[in-house]
Length: 184
Image (cartoon, rainbow, N blue to C red; front, side, top):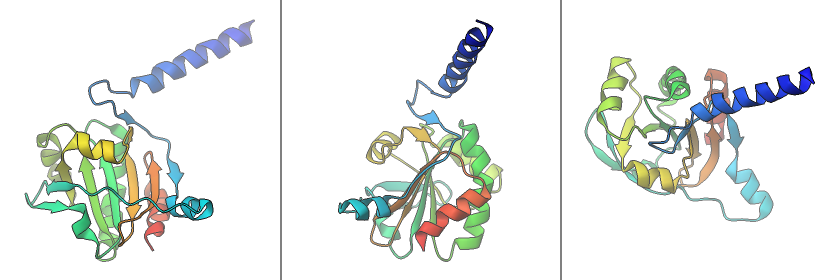
């Protein structure tokens, strides 16, 4: 009986802890456990056409320049969805900065904020000394197009605009290195 009661209490605690990560205002959940999906191999194996990355317009929070994702076709793109209120996202940012410094000549890096407004990420990024490109656009439209239900969420998009890989959850530097290899 004690084991059954203990198991029930542990299950309830897990529901409370993981349920707390769901933020009702945005409907976007913070996720710490990476879930890797490599789109190309799955699509090829099933004989299905690979998924084209939905195009969108964003404003660079540092320069104020408006750009389309499709304008970045000269190199593969690492696309990350994040928010300042998401602890796993914030924990991942130093690793993105390190990989940006290492690969910026070979991969476009783009972190899209889903904060709900521009002010918080526009202040947050420079205050932490990050130099990788951070954009802001129509959060709802972009999130819907990419089916962003949990963050951080990252994609690798090739030079033809095809989604090569997707991962949901925070990555450490080694995980991010392995994920970026999908770009080559």
